[in-house]
Length: 109
Image 1 (cartoon, helix red, strand yellow):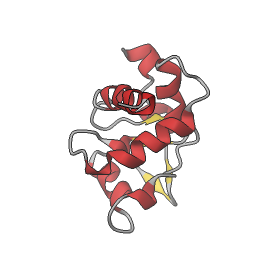
Image 2 (cartoon, helix red, strand yellow):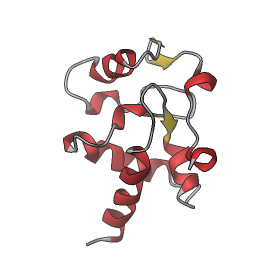
Image 3 (tube, one colour):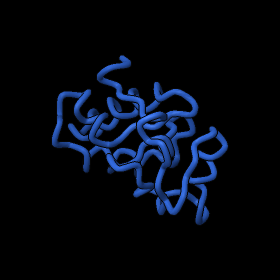
Image 4 (cartoon, one colour):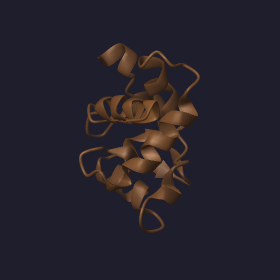
């Protein structure tokens, strides 16, 4: 097992805890795991999570609430549709009222 595989598993463990109807950011997960500058690595982990049914990768967005990972989902708007099914408002790939739906693992776990 490579070191990155172990990190990815830690990322997935956190992502599995994101509540329905909430989102977090790549950077917030990285900071929680003690790797504050690893937002890009968290993004890579989410990219590889598309075949893991128990990892809600659609709930992880960039720090501004942009759906930067949407091209890794099947279909043009699947990421947005999954979020909207949870009651999250998305306009032009941007989550609205991010501060209301943001879940910070450093505060919640």
